[in-house]
Image (cartoon, rainbow, N blue to C red):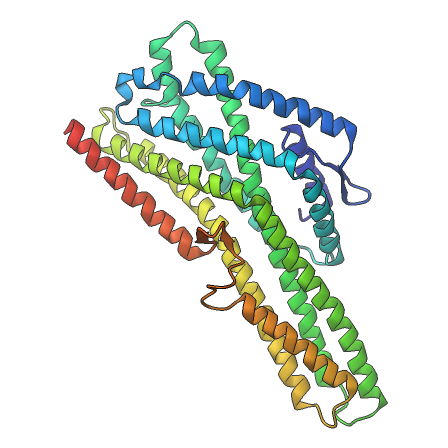
Length: 411
């Protein structure tokens, strides 16, 4: 979302896989709601996804308990398959039920982005590329679950050697497309908040420019100082309006995606447990153990873990960006108060406006937000690095429980 060509490629690819049923108009930089070819194409594709879903699910996960060589993996794969199935149903339903709201919020967000498009945005581009690169670990893990020994396809191949080629491979392709759609949502949420954080940083820089302007104003009362303060007040009101608008847009977009974020984190959580468990099984029970294979599996898991932590960190960064903006607001308020002599009208109005803005951010960024919790998912957990670390420790704890159960059953 940081360059026009990249933005167009992003929307075209999402439309190609049937995820985005909104048409992006590059000349006007806006989303079009009722673009008939796009709507018809996405509708046909999404209906096909829903119709194919039960057949692909039954092929990949159905009758999995007949695979004796899978051991405990049959239950793990079944739970993972059901979680992915439910997540896809929620995703496809949400795409159509909230398209009008997404069109309005998307256009407002794009308009706000192009107000601050002067910077090169290299930092934003780099973060997004890192996210996309690490996200590819999900597909490696999915292929590993489908094809490697102790995998679904290996078991299916031994049960039904003649029918594996056309149907199971088609089901695998379908599973990869579904994973691409789910991954696209996570990348979209990440890109929105990365660009949002950059917008907050740009607003903080504008605020610093206002502080510099106040410092160079004449200390004596008179028309030059009054005119300068009026201009700063006008610029501040416009900047604060955009700050409030950005905060509201990020909150609404987060509300739209929160169910999908929850289910995606749930499936990622199960994937991580299964991956740690598979790695332990491979190290402890594999007859043809290879150090390079073990290192590759470990590297894929670490890449997957870093990708999940990036999802949590971006919300943590959002809070820190707002806190820096708050500090600049306080600096501007103290500076204006210290130079407030006889109390010009512009000085008094600016001070009052800054006080209300500081109170707003204090409420938003309070340390123990029992009453106000903006960065959370359905009230279940906060979107912060602490939640990411708690999720990591829970992954290893549950993988350890599975290992203990395996020791008890198989010795």
